[in-house]
Image (cartoon, rainbow, N blue to C red; front, side):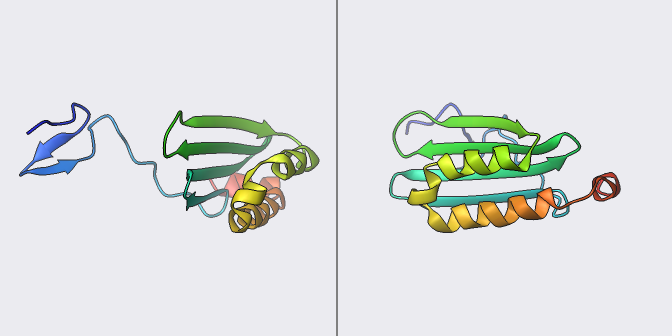
Length: 119
């Protein structure tokens, strides 16, 4: 039986590799996670409201090919909106697109006092 060098075997069951760590759940006050899967692969978004603006991670995981991860920091709502409107997820995953819009609006509306309390 061949084994994958990136997984460990325990009692005959493949487990997560030791170097892979799962991110803690998002703080619902200042962070949001959303994702969608389709025939071509998956797309994941992580949004976090920070004092400098809105931090966004976009990860695209195709079924075949190279995984792409983008990390961006938007200091103005308008810049984020233009970026979001140009993202292909708008057409490929319209429900995810709307969720991204709702999550971003909720995070942009946080005040600096909300960000301080979330720590």
